[in-house]
Length: 387
Ligand SMILES: C[S@@+](CC[C@H](N)C(=O)[O-])C[C@H]1O[C@@H](n2cnc3c(N)ncnc32)[C@H](O)[C@@H]1O
Image 1 (cartoon, rainbow, N blue to C red):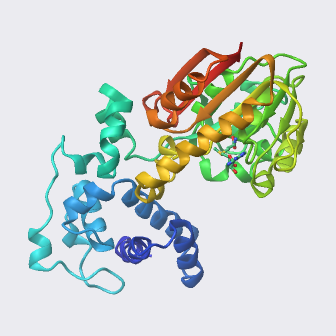
Image 2 (cartoon, rainbow, N blue to C red; image 1 turned 135 degrees about the vertical axis):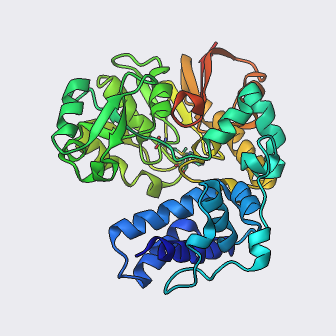
Image 3 (cartoon, protein in one colour; image 1 turned 90 degrees about the vertical axis):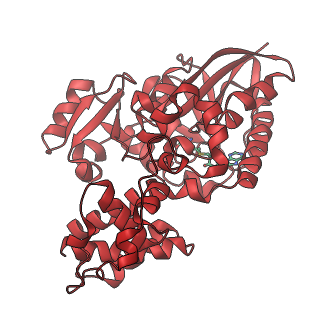
């Protein structure tokens, strides 16, 4: 496909997403209906679409319209490309610009709200949560996220992981956020088909997630319950960090834990699973990796930032409070409760912990925010001790 034909495809896909279609599904349907498009075309179109989802407001301002066509006009102008060189009306290319389109579009300016690419209602909360980092984080979140791997120290060391990846043409380098973190610098699309991945030397995991697990006081023999285990990212990281800890995984949705057993087998990790609602007894450490807005990961899932509503955020906060209470019942006397989110928002982080600990009986042992400026996703982790 020519670059102009890829733009036409992206315009069509963005219009379907604007009409409510989930981005991944719309992209899959487009690929099924356009089998002539090769993997390079599909990847390029996906990048166009995801860049536009990340920069929706600023591209719309530059393009002069909040439509797929306006987004792509804005995307080109943001890169300093004159849209009329690609919007030619030639076969498969978008139609030429009208006089109105040529005249429309403006740079919102470096300090403008539209330039920050957040939903308006969320800006005050983000300003409060991020403080002086607000503008820098906003601009950073417009770009693609780096790809990270976690070295499985139960199987190999850093040099072994880097060498095994290099043998398959994947270039990865240590990242300072976590001792286990590697940033993939080349060959990211090959990782999941590589031997290094299939044999559990490395696992896909954001560096901030890995850093958060490093804050957990894991020691051999510790009884650990991962209360919101999902696909097991944290449970597997804990098992790799301390193979002698006794880790159990639980989730309200058994389907979310479907991948845990094969991932644990690949990693050589021993993780017990509890059926939904069947976590029993007490543990020395209970981890709540809570459902949240995911605002710290919106570089990877930019559609989610435009779908979040104040009502949904309030529901999530209430759910987080409820889960904290339920999970805390499983903490043994003198044990610990750890709370994590991949959210940038105080409402889901510090405020949740303040409300929970105000009930008494808990002491905050550690708390930190891992901001996107450090390289990984936005993340929050607190460890509380039961007095
Ligand atoms: C952020 S995700 C967990 C990600 C996972 N820990 C990982 O590292 O891959 C949050 C999980 O919480 C689960 N969840 C939602 N409500 C819950 C509840 N009331 N009790 C337990 N788990 C719940 C969701 O099903 C989801 O899998």
